[in-house]
Image (cartoon, rainbow, N blue to C red; front, side, top):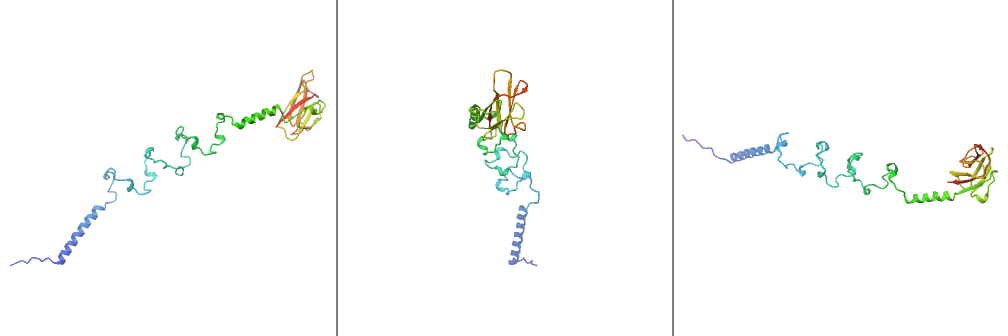
Length: 233
């Protein structure tokens, strides 16, 4: 008895090819689809993860190991002021000589931050010294007053009034055109005794500020004496 061989048909061929394609596709898919957590550090060859392979903002601060970013890894100009937290740069972190005059903004250093002993005299201060010396040599107002509270106009300048106090040895002298900040008085020497004089801005009720009160003494007793007085601003 003869056995009949199966004959190939178009349907048989088509179904066989479809099965082969399906099996090969499943194998390729299985090769590219990896299970979760199956790829670790040992599976990565050196240089496999490049900068282009890292998603933007994927590396956050908690992912960076302490001390991992060294000076040589930082590009010039990459750290700007807006990226620095307030107070993040302490004095101990500044290299000696790194903050130069060009790096300090105008008016950034206030008076309380300056060691005054390190400063030299500014040019205008020399003029002020000269003005003080000039005023000492030629005061704005001065007077010669007799023991009877009379103003000697020939030896006086810019004096508005002179009066005697309610007690002997007290005089009240008023400058003209300004309020003095200080005064210097010298008793008029008459050839005998120990005579002294004192001056201050304001004093008894007879001589309120800004008038200058002068008191004259012979020994320890206040008494009438002539004097010379100069006023300063």
